[in-house]
Every structure is written in C-alpha cells, then in structure tokens.
Image (tube, rainbow, N blue to C red; front, side, top):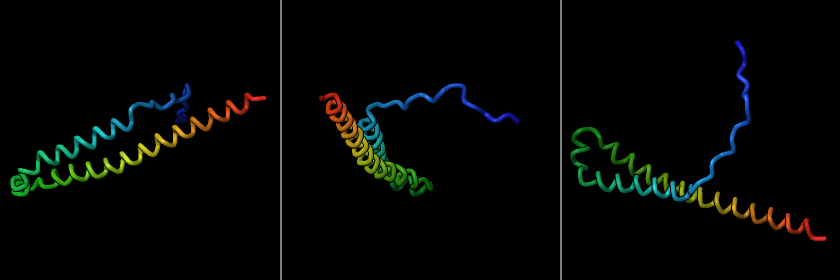
Length: 93
C-alpha cells in the first residue's frame, strides 16, 4: 500500500467576517430557543425537551465563541501593527 503524499501545498486559511458569523449563529440559536419556549409542554410530553436545551446550549457556547473570536481578532490586529512598526523601524537609517 502506497503512502499518500500531497501533490501541492495546502492553501492559506480563508479569513472572513468571523466575529459576524459567530454572532449571527449565536443569535440564531437564541431565537430558536425563544421560538420553542412556548411549546415547552408539548416537547416534554413527546420526549423532545432536549431540542429546547440544545438551542440554549448552542447560544451559550456561541457567547463563548464570540468572546474567543474577538480576542483572536484583536491579537491578529496587534501582531500586524507590531510587524508594521518593526518594518518601518528597520527601514530607518
């Protein structure tokens, strides 16, 4: 059996509006929770109460995700500024 070897290098990761994406997903989870909340009794009677708690857990984890990606973006921005300042300092005689 031949070992798999890549034919080309992996592409750079795509950077997009990560904070907006995670925030949007978190809002969707909380909205789903709120939409299902009036039907609590029905979910309980039919053994689907976990649907409600899954939405709440998704919203809670989304809040942690928002905190994480905001910190990540701030760190990336600070590193870029630090690299730019170092490049400018290196060009000075």
